[in-house]
Amino acid sequence: MRLKKFADFSVYVVVRLLICIIQALPLSACAVISKHVGGLCWHRLKLRRDVLEENLRYAFPAKTQAERDRIALAMWEHLLLMVMEIAHAPRKVSRTNWRSHSAVPGMKEVLQRLIDERPTVMISGHLGNFEMGGYLLSLHGFPTHTIARPLDNPYLDRFITRFREATGQYMLPKQGSGRQVALLLEQGGTLNLLGDQHAGQNGCWVDFFGRPASTHKAVAVLTLSGKAPTAVVAALRGDRPLYIEMHVADMVDPQDNDFSLGTIPLLTEWYTRNLEYLIRKAPEQYWWVHRRWKGQPTDRRELRRQKRKRQAAA
Image 1: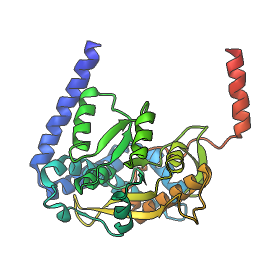
Image 2: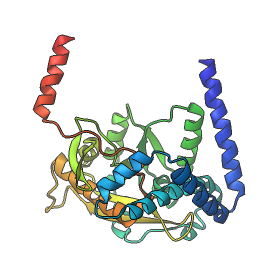
Image 3: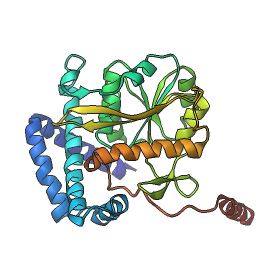
Image 4: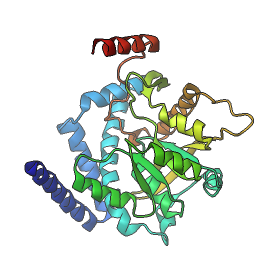
């Protein structure tokens, strides 16, 4: 136990030192470093290269290998620059200069929903600088709640949580926060969710870039049970570091007369399709390093039969 605490604290100290170095550098230097280190990750270290190539083949079968390689290289540059942007944000972005660091094209309808008394659900994915999305929205005066799994390292978890909550965003644990989420929706709060995480064999299977992907049902359940207007959004980097554009792909309201997505599969298919649309706008800003496609859909009745069989044997 003591050894683990020492190891966790040592990692925390190293991370803090790296952040101090990053914060001492201008953003222009961070962009150059990200470009060179990104090339090292892709060309020399070949980090998760098999996963990257497989995912990009699934997503863009019509592109050439050279085009997919350019997306993979740009993704590494994006991920590294994203970390550096997060390190700089608390010192460089404030309520007095947010226009220099963000834009909200097409956000009029969403803003109208945010000032309404009804709850709002905002669905995004591992796209763009999604950490800055909730940070900036709260900076604009709209407190949000985001569900996330706590980090295994408690020192890093507290540090990251302080950043996330610095402007009025509140973090909820992925496990055990059901009552808090229900209360939040009853009180008309705003909930941020990631909609592109693998949900295992019992998830809701919908097409993502033309291939079945297991998706968590809870995202759709919260919209339908809370009768909450729901938007699919992304915080994409603009034409320079630490300039974030908040894009809205689509928005639906379960209380509209023409609402036709009243089941979990239909709603899940809708937001997954819109996430795909946003990813296609900036494929180099998506996390292709994680395995989105795992396994194949299995007949649910057979799964339940196997589960009952295991329970009976136990």
